Structure formats: structure tokens, C-alpha cells
Figure 1 (tube, rainbow, N blue to C red):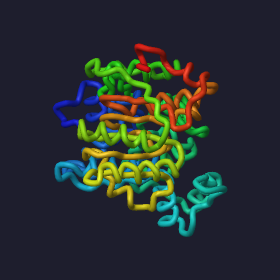
Figure 2: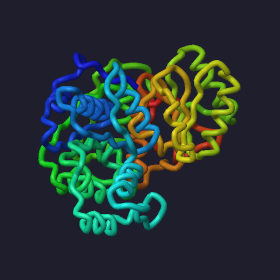
Figure 3: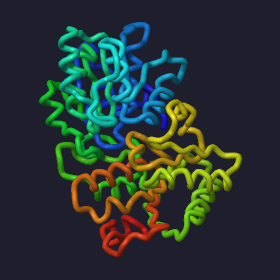
Figure 4: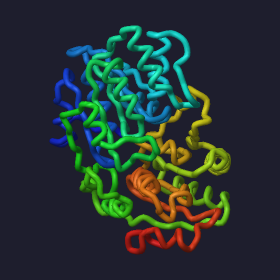
Length: 367
């Protein structure tokens, strides 16, 4: 992932960049339209010496938070607080209310009790602006909390097509929270045209149209068949040795993430081979430099907001055949992580005939 320089920002992005920090805004756009980049640019402007505002950048998971923090600090820029929604709200509660944040289950906050506690304590916002990336996967209660107690103004970046959580929210729901100013981003700066065509096969007809790809045609996505994890690792290692690019490998289970890391480290001993799951110890994600050539292995849940030069997507089975919108949105989001080349991986456990038939046919997907 690279943060675009100011001169590379297009008109629709400049409108986001130039919008006053003294107002809330909602920025909507498909994968590759630059939502995360513009969230970081907006944060950098606000903490600049000219404005010197108190802001924080909220992301979906710890890995995306770490990457956003790395991008925000480039070019000797001042540090910007980045955090996940859960850690940010929990810290704020501990600091301003005291004690552990009320929860009904792990990562499920008791928002009714939280609102009651803040109301009794007569809490007022401290931050000037709270910038929220990938907002579609956060609970609606968080936005009500953020608007009332988190910050004077909110800058929210979202795409309801990428809602991969059952409790995710729509653009309409965000507008009902009070976001009246909506900025659309409609240009795809990430995917080649061939990758964008495949991604479009999983696009659902909702409020945001599919972005128009800005980049060239590129190679068509390809379906690879592997019989073993060792064979899979051989393919990834060979690609890296030939291309030396930032490669992403997306599998389903934590055990598969760890197994692929072991296999690839053995094949690429002098190469960065990182792995991240929700089991990764807190703080270890800060050492993952995804923009450096190498391999990053993750599960599908950790992929939101990220991008790779080449992507091997093995986490397919649970989304095929598509029988509900959540599966469709998951495939839409996952396939859109690829910049130059996309490989869909069939194996080591093979997809069924019905699952294979539900994937796009040639020439969209080479087989």
C-alpha cells in the first residue's frame, strides 16, 4: 500500500481533502477508490501545524490500524493516534468513566449501559475530529456514541458493499445518524481492468455503483488447483522469486495461516514472510511492513482495507456457492485486494462442482 502524493489526488479526492474539519462528513466509495488514503490525508491535514487539531483514526482491525499508522507517519509527518474501534472505546471509557467497559460478550459491548454511564457523568467530546475508516463493519451504536461523546465532528469512510459482518450498517443508516454531507469516490485506482471485471461479478446492486477502473487491462485472474499445502507454498515462493513484489495469501483458518508461514519461511529464508490473525499478540502487527516486498499471510477476516501486488485467495469454500448477500460481499471485498494479479486457489481441499460452477467463466477467470 502506498499513500498517493498530493499532486496525484483527483478532483473527487481533493473535495474530501479540502472539506472543512469543522464539519462532519461521510465519504462513500468502492474498493480501490482511495477511502483509506483519504482518511489518512484528512488526518494529516488536521494535525498539521496550521490546524493542530486533536484527532484519532479508527480502523476495523489491528493490522489495518498498524498500516494506517505507518502511512500517516511518512515524510516526517506528526504521529496520528490510530486504534481499532474496540480498543478506542474501551480506553476512553476507562479514562473518563473508570473501570472495565461493560460487555455482554467478547467484543460485544453493552451500549445501553455505556450510554447511561456517559450520560450520568455528563461527558462531553474531547477530540476535534474522529476519522473512521471502513465504517460499514462497525455497529451503529458506535456512531451514535462517537457523535455524542467521542468527538465534535466525525469523518466516516465506508462502502456498504464490503459489509462482511452481520451487524454491519448501510449508508442509509449512517445518514440517519446525522451525516448530511456525502462525498462519493467513484474511480478505482487499485485494480487492473481485468481484476475489476471479476470483482464486478460479485457486486450487488445497492446504493454505490462499481468504481470505474483507472489502470490498464492487466493479466486476467486465474484459477489454480493445488493438491497440498506444500504445492501451494511452492507456487507462492516461485512467484516471489520471479517478481519480488508484495504478495498476499488469504486462507480461512488460523492453523492454515501458521502452516503457510512455516512453509514459506523454509522456501524464502531471506524474505519477509509475515502472518497475522486475530490470535496475533497485541503489538506484533506493528512490525509487519506490508509495503516491503515479501509475503503476508492472513485470514479473510483481516483483509478489509488492505491491498497486495499479487493475491492468492484460497478462502473461497465458505462463500461458494453464493446463497446469501454476506457471501457475495465477502468475495467482492476479498478479490478487490489485488492490484496486479489475482489467483483463486482451489485446494488443498477441493471445491465442489457446484462451487466451481458458481465462479466466473473464461475469459473473466482463466481455468
